[in-house]
Length: 188
Length: 82
Image 1 (tube, rainbow over the protein chains, first blue to last red):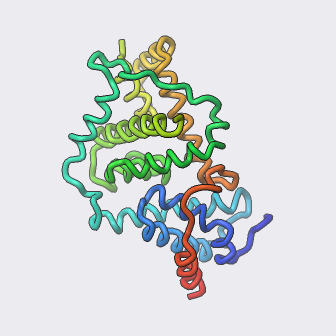
Image 2 (spheres, helix red, strand yellow):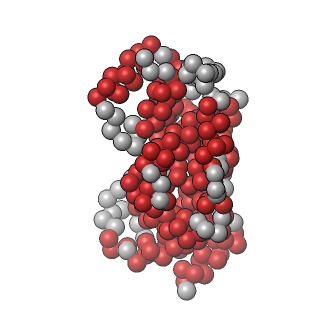
Image 3 (tube, rainbow over the protein chains, first blue to last red):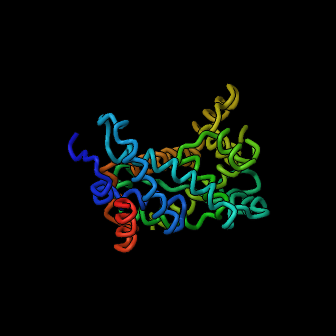
């Protein structure tokens, strides 16, 4: 497998920034993200014989990173604003404002064009980072766990002690507001 | 008839659970006639693609955005040598 060295320092050189960026998008704290990268590389080295060599080294490392992100969310949840008291009220307003009283969209949605072109555009990635960082902490954590770390709904519900209905509502709000923010920011 | 507000919610929930038969029909019919909601659906798919791309080697995000600082990199290196 080209580039496959069982050497965590090589992994750090090759993949360090990508892992850091991925962790930071979810955890939103540089120290936690750094911790996630470090723990990922340590675990990866311990598990190196379990990597079949099929598929990309980066994807394998990201798979380990996802677990570390979940661990760090657990570890740091109480220290931060993640346990805020009433996120429901303000989030309600933010999505309701996107619709007219009769349920139609308040503003037309724009054509984002060719998906591949969009993903090659620096402005898209800058906007994505900005918009993820703008999400309220509780929504951001739920969004990250579901859309990036890939946790199933039931797992997240157990993890955060929320009902499935509550979870789906929060995911809907985070996705809808993210889309709205992205459209404003990256299309210009 | 489902409203755009209903459909955006159902489209989102379809990512987390299986919609029921009648919900599926309701979504489909609405999407036939509503350009905005079709775009909403496309945008959700684009976002999914973006998050998948973040995990790959050829992500276009990699040239930009935050990087490990030299200090952080060195700290990690030391821990790895630990």
